[in-house]
Image 1 (spheres, rainbow, N blue to C red):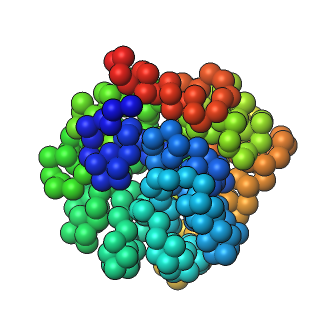
Image 2 (tube, one colour):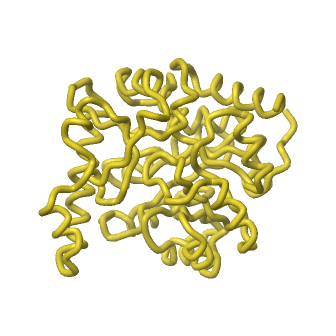
Image 3 (cartoon, rainbow, N blue to C red):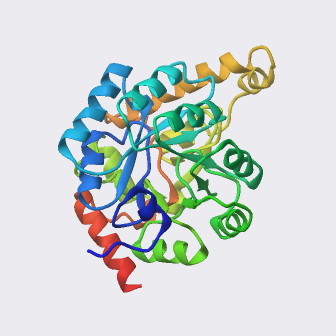
Length: 321
């Protein structure tokens, strides 16, 4: 297939301008291997691995079984106690790119440059985008209001043109894209590539429970709500009966601790760990206490199928649009 004329394809040498977005507890090496084989790329959150030895083994497996670029997503704030170790391992193993989230990417950019590894930074507004460009980021990922996970406050129709006007580095869009036609429209809006996650949850290769996958089929965009209970930062989840029961806002004590200057760092880390444990329990088991992370693009998920078919459908829709 002919390579699409997009900066993401040029930067990474891929056929089709899609990053299979790093999804906490969902993305793994098997998904990345399949993504690479279809002509796209993908990234895995480093936190999906229990320790840095597991992370190293996963990177080596991908390199052995697939011939193409892939990345690792790093949480670069104080809640991630493994950050420096993860960064070191990824540099030693020569991943192709980093995606940085929830903090300053300065240390990652500085170290990555020594190893000639590209750094794409999640941004939600122009001010932060300008800062990371100045630090030497290779591209930004515009996390729009329509994104899954930690969504931004601004719609893609506003954010993408704004960033394209002010930045000299490429801008990739994340949020609300679930079809090939949507990818085409995003490129026409000015995006240099796209990051897509939620439509890959309901795939044969995803390691999560069948119940989680089926929820992505059964629910739609209207069923996505924001909760601060998982990490302290607003995060999108499927509005299951359990989520409705426990609510989506922190209680009064959690809000006070979250604002206390001395305790904030530790409380955020505790909230993050507790929230991630809740997601882990839901992702891999069927219980009524389900908190499933997903974005509005599950609207376009109609059945559980292999990643190869998902990407084929995207390509078909793109070239027919």
